[in-house]
Image 1 (tube, rainbow, N blue to C red):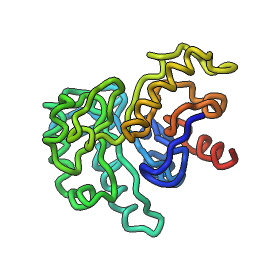
Image 2: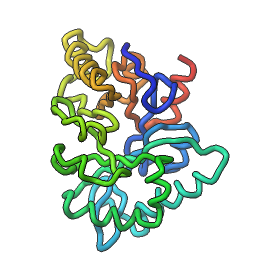
Image 3: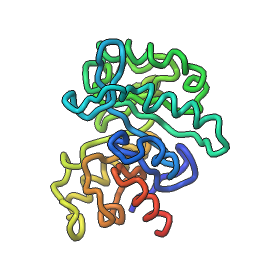
Length: 232
């Protein structure tokens, strides 16, 4: 198992709360378990960003502001606050979504610009060679196989890939050796540019967690995964 430490804290395994808004207690379960990364998918509705996995699942009132930005501000004022990243997955085009995000962030610029919370964009991103043109508080989820220029690489917080693109393993038994080699090569390449790696779409089970090749665990089971690594 390849473990990473030193990018965000001293914990070798870090938890990414995948589709956090679908959890029983969005945001709060993640921070109670000290997840280093919290993900919210967004769609543009009027002048608001609505949090949902698909357009048909959009519910009135579930704005990014209400579900995440306001709770983050409140949490930042507590003794339990720690540094983490909020990953916002753009489900619609960059050109449509980015201006709406900037408007939503306006009241909270101090929090994000001072680095207390890292703001990371995934999903529909601008061309990678333009990353350096965006404000300091805007960071990006990187992709494997991209030759980032140094000024753009500084804006990348981690490298992410779809597990299913490299392995069809469903979580039973051991990961096949050939798959391990493919997966490991991605993680090592990220390590070489000093970035942690996240596989999304991997089996969300203890058997996978045990064999995980990356330092970031992408999970819908935040509490279970956290407890597992505390004991292991």
